[in-house]
Image (cartoon, rainbow, N blue to C red):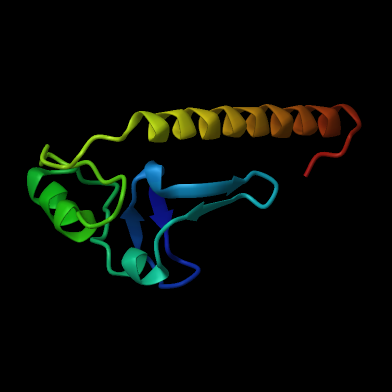
Length: 116
């Protein structure tokens, strides 16, 4: 997931794992993540015009290796447990419901002539 840090630090975009999203507010158009601003700020910068090369992957791995949910090329990290998988599935269903509700609200607004 790409995070544009323009609101905090000028001109930097970084990559983070979608697994770190703890809450999504479709109405506020915000994604909340389980990490600090400092961890995001110090993350290796992502350049959308360049392919993600092995050296960049290694840099990401070194930066994020201590965070839960990080899965890199190092397969020594423990896989998620069944209870975590169940929780993730429940969260995914909730997010899908929120998306459907937000989409329905947009359609309703459009039908009633309330377009942004």
